[in-house]
Length: 438
Image (cartoon, rainbow, N blue to C red; front, side):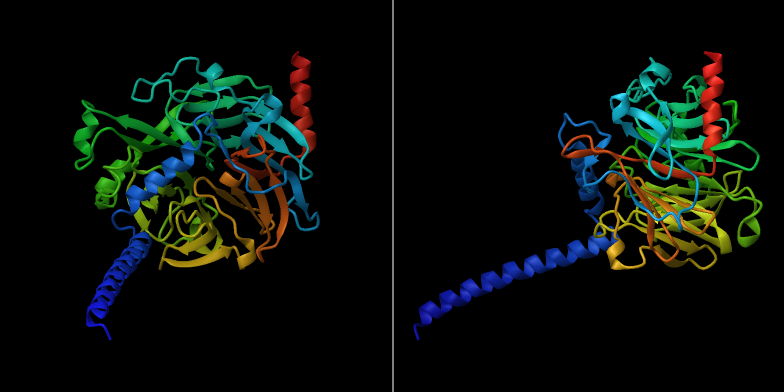
């Protein structure tokens, strides 16, 4: 055997093995860093997120890629559906793709529509900060709603303000505070709404939050009366610092101005409170997406329970029966499968409620909402897939609605699907009342 050739072959083999070992190490670290969110997980994840949302510059941001090649009501098991009407927030072809809030019946027929033109409601932004005039556009989302039996509806124009509109589309009042994502109607008839303030250079609030680099957003919870008056304001950042949880911000302060992303608020009712030994009536559960945390606070802003790292960029935690909190776990970056999961705050035990098998996969990297219905079913909003569907406790899909596509490639995102028990005869009364005024 030629010793010289053998030596060359061994050298080549050793180089291949070296390269292979490096690849294995990189792959292994990539897996570990993704699972445990180590460097450079957050940098790469934010970069991918930006690429996802940018797509093509000429495409409006409210559009996503078509995932389901169907539209309208496509599943309708009348024997197992929860009766009622479904409220949907999206963008609609009938109003030239402007934002709007729509009620449909279980067959998909349009019962009522509120058109929302942010530029008409706020021709000039009432805010004087880094994003002044950036959100009062007709491409802005409606995100967070509450519908009253008389047809009045309260909603957020995302990061612009809170609005009350009657069934004729007339604005009754508007609150010029950067509200967003969530509107919750409590037992007292008041509203709890996600809010946001900009902290910039020269702002005296920078002294309150050491470690954070300006500019950044300070998330707040607002308690608002039905006539649009702010009754209380709670700073989530202040609660985090007071509770010594500020170390959870370390990954975010240098990567994004949106530190917490408060995407949901819900108040514990007096009816459910006995089921939760750690909490009492009036305590508040919130979702902080950007630190993958769920928090329960009292109405003085004191943190009573903090759950971090169990869910991934989650949405919509709800207090439910038997003392559990149920969550839309987006599981962003974890294989493209979202889940509805529930946690016991006493011992942090977690169970998966949906999907119940591999054939029921659904996914939205951002957004998402679920609603426990009175018959035990659950209504789920798959935001980026523009789909709302109802499932039984066993996981059977008994109702499904998919948004109309924008074109052959894109479909408007759907932020909310909520079932209401309002009778259609009541909706007809709204129309008659306003036609009489005309």
